[in-house]
Image (cartoon, rainbow, N blue to C red; front, side, top):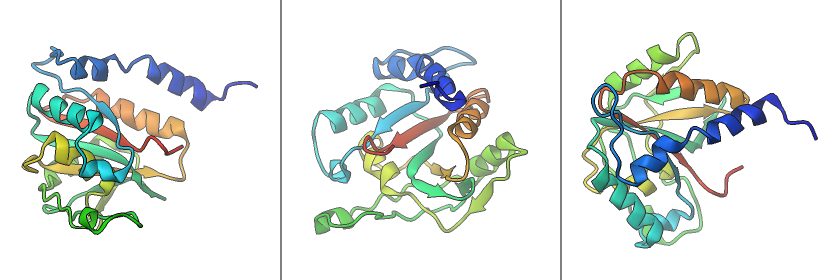
Length: 198
């Protein structure tokens, strides 16, 4: 079967993930000062938010290893909507977007502040792609279930960028490229995806 254009572009993306691997080994990437890496997290079972296991310990170690960012830009598979949006709230709510789990999980709050300035910057970087400034969404469990281990104090601002369900993989790849070539300025991109997502 012939590979699609999207498949071949994603294969090339796989070969470029050395930055995230280097970060997990605790290496510093030097370019324009300390360039913070883009990191891919597979959050797995939402109960990992409450668990201590080899996955959550690795997430915590990453938080202790990489330089502390000014803010985190998270792209979560759980904000899958028919547009490209970015959260602009100064106090994003903790969203419990799942069902059938123990009550304890629904009580978890991750009160990290938002960063409207970063949201506006993301919008400008992605122009001419329309990017909605969203005040209604918050931090879904794809983001907070991981970050509560990486940054348990919830004291680093977090902004989420949606995945546009109407666009092909190549569209999202190019969004990643546009964000990657911008000066880091102490921001950190975290691609947070459940391993059981397609």
